[in-house]
Image (cartoon, rainbow, N blue to C red; front, side, top):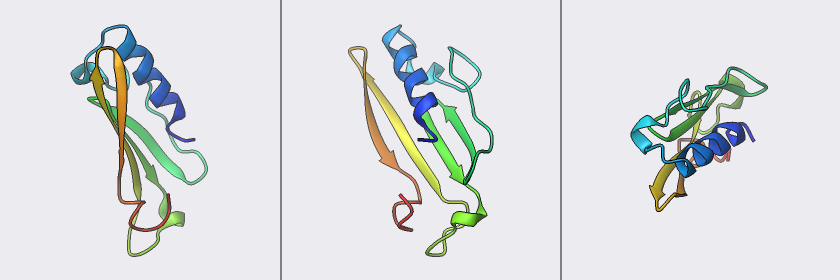
Length: 92
């Protein structure tokens, strides 16, 4: 849920012809988000969305776990690859 706004903004920008290299927070309708609940920040750089957890969600030796969505744009469509440290820690 923390990445929903950024994900939608990246998809809309991609559909209007914005390339991965220009999918950054602060431009093309994409915003970076501050702290909320267990999330410290959500930032977007070159179409890679990274949500970082605060210390309250540390698990499995992972401090400030991350959840990432990496965009690949082809023919105006966005394909997402999920990553980050939260998976190995069992947090997402």
